[in-house]
Length: 291
Picture (cartoon, rainbow, N blue to C red):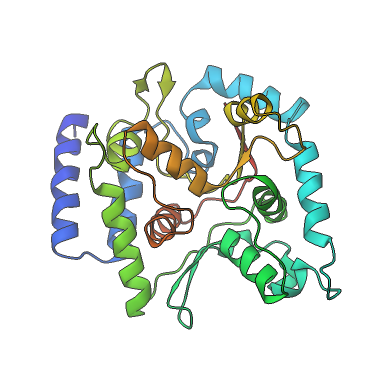
């Protein structure tokens, strides 16, 4: 089957899957099959590395960067200290999580029936703080991203376990995330899928468009661009350069000239829920390192 034919078939299937309300399992099978067909030489497990799964030269340079001089080391240590820092009541963040918060990143996000919403790792961290009468950390970057990065690092190598099940609330959140992923928006009239599914591996203004498969595995990420922005603003702390997935979502919206939603909004948590399920079987490898 030629790539063009497969593309046309996929477009039809995506349309009908949305109108006929296909099951998450059938969506997952189609989604992962598409990337297998589009990039037949790329091994499934390598998709956790984003664009570096697609370009050998970029991957070689990135690997040297990661192995010999990861710029996020200080930020990771900073996140660890914050994680174990005692609240005024003597407890720490570890008191709110199973297994003391170690090695659990792969279980997020999940749908909480009692709350009636998707719970991301960052939301759980701030919920823990407010439960212990501490102030919330600012969303998207800074201290929260550093703590989340540390927690992600303790789950490195564990496969994502996002579950949908038959709960009506979970299915509704999944469908909302799926709709958001395929819906066009902004002045450029792009959807997430336009860039990261149908044009994945292509160039856009000198940048290689990453595949959506594996997008969530390496967050929070440290980006050189974010570190430079922080320094330009006079912020030189060890956590500069870190950002959450919702920070990246907001950046993507701005790139296509669409108004970003707030971090931890239903739109973004549902999108993260959908994307995490689509990456089922891939391993956590955060914090990631990107340009």
